[in-house]
Image (tube, rainbow, N blue to C red; front, side):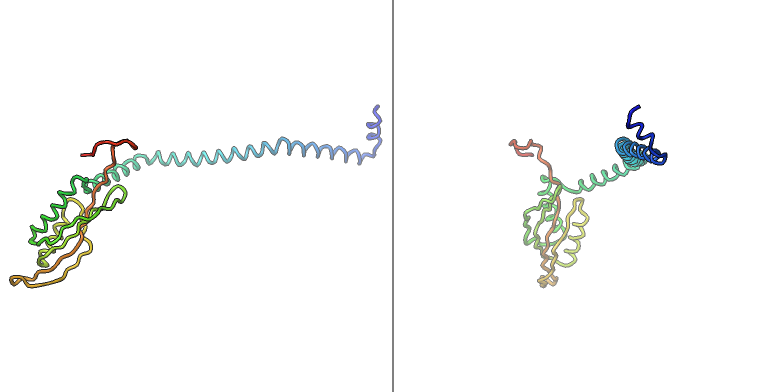
Length: 202
């Protein structure tokens, strides 16, 4: 018999038991750190992925259940956008629109002393087109003009309004009316490919 084995067998019982316990603890520790811990971490990772997938699935199911509502809301918003864009004239329509504003002033009995279009300002998909107005007429004529402008099919805002310089003309009080009429136009995107020159858009 091997001398080492004999030495162990000759040890007191409590020492042999202690050695067995130590060997079992060493095996258990090796199993935990080399095999079980890696599987435990992998299991935890899979649980997290499963939970994330369940959350995503619930969100997708909620969207699917409300898809008809979202589609109806989108179509409603698209219709509102189309309606709003319909109130923005194209660049080629601006001259006639400005002419209409001048015609309204004359129609309401106002004298046009200055009608000067200013430089437009691009603001994304639309541009502001201001016109400086200097008019002369009665208060009621000015009020009728502004009311008519507010009822135009296209959007026209009046800003910077000042009234002054009242004077009597043929028994009637005439005021100086200064303001800016600001309309808006839809900014048309160029159809020419980037970097290539083409003819002017009509």
